[in-house]
Every structure is written in C-alpha cells, then in structure tokens.
Length: 246
Image (tube, rainbow, N blue to C red; front, top):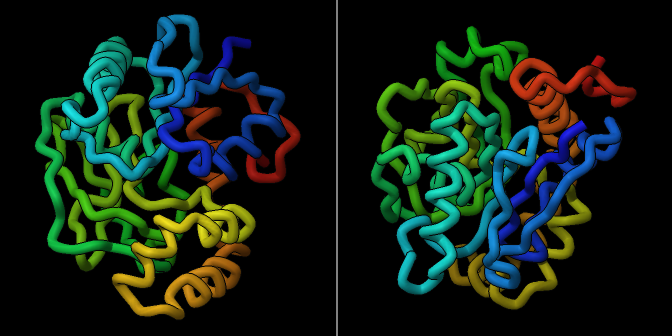
C-alpha cells in the first residue's frame, strides 16, 4: 500500500480524526512539517495527499517562501488526478493552485457554527450520506472563489464557499477533524487564545472548548465517515476495521 502524503503547516494542526482513520486502516502516512522542513517529496510516490490548516494566507508567498512550491506541487498532482483532501488553508491552497482567487473574507469566522450542504453534495460519492446541515468548528479569516469546473458542496451564512470538489480533489474550509482533546491543546497556545479573546472577550476560549466538547459526539464520527468514504471511493483503499467504514 502506498502511503498518504500529509502536508502539515503547524505542529499543533495535525489531521487528528482523519489520521485516526488512516491508522485504524493500517494506511501508512508520510508527514512533512512545512516551515520546519520545506523540502517537498515527489508526490508520485503516494496514494493521495492530505493538506492541513495553518495561520498563514495562501497568498503570503513572500513571507513564507515554501508556499509557492507547495502550490506548484498541488497543481501538478491534482492536474494528474491525484486524490486530494484539503482542510482550511489546505482548501484555500487548492483553490489558489487551480487558479481561483484567495482573499481576506468579510470577517473572522471563528466558533462552532452551522454549515449547510448544497444540492450537489447530495449526489457526491463522499458527501451524499452526510446530514444536510451540521454544526462544526470554523477558524479562518480568508475565503476563495470557486475554481473553474468545481462543484460547490457547502456554504455558511458568512462564507459562501465552505467546500468544493473537482475531480478527485476535495476542499473543506471547516475543521471536522478537531477533537476536544486537540481543541484543549489549542487553548494553551498564547496566539490562539489572544485571537479568541480579541474577537469575543476573555471567556471566549473556555466557551469554545465547551462548544467543541458538546459537538464532538457528532462531528468526529462525521469526519471519519466522510474521510472513510473518500479513502474507499476516491483513493481506492479497501474498507478496514474502522466502524466509520462499515
């Protein structure tokens, strides 16, 4: 079995529930921590690519020189029909690599907030069995245009573009994968705490953590179910022992 390439932009933003699904199936993964190790491997060695979130913008090439190489890798791989799963920044990088604009949004979308699926999602092999709407963690200030030829899969009241698919490449602006344990780690990071407090007051970190704990019984199983269907129906990895895959 070829490994899955994981491009991670921060030590504290791993694939979380998605990684749990990979490990439950015995799928090997190769992790690259960009910023610490900017050398990218040959994407042709892998079965699929998973690209996670980060605090940087997809357009900040001058500040983060490795972003340009990462977008080139994404464009080449997706152009060759490589399965791709992008989360938050990973979704924005996919949009940028496909030629769409990525820009600052109308305001920070931060909190456990509702997302609504589109009609096209009901026909998608990954999203077809998902609830029509669900409440999930959002933590971003940038948005993107829908790339040419892509199908929109989800929207929210503040951000029109929440998820899309183009071929075998999927982009999710929201964080289904974050567990309450990972959220608790984020609440110990000064920069994350400062962002929350600046937006919603000194009690914001504690409130967000409680919201994450309440959402986790639905959000994490949904994360693993969607990712499981992507692994099986898009990547072509056979079902494993994970309950989410049954």
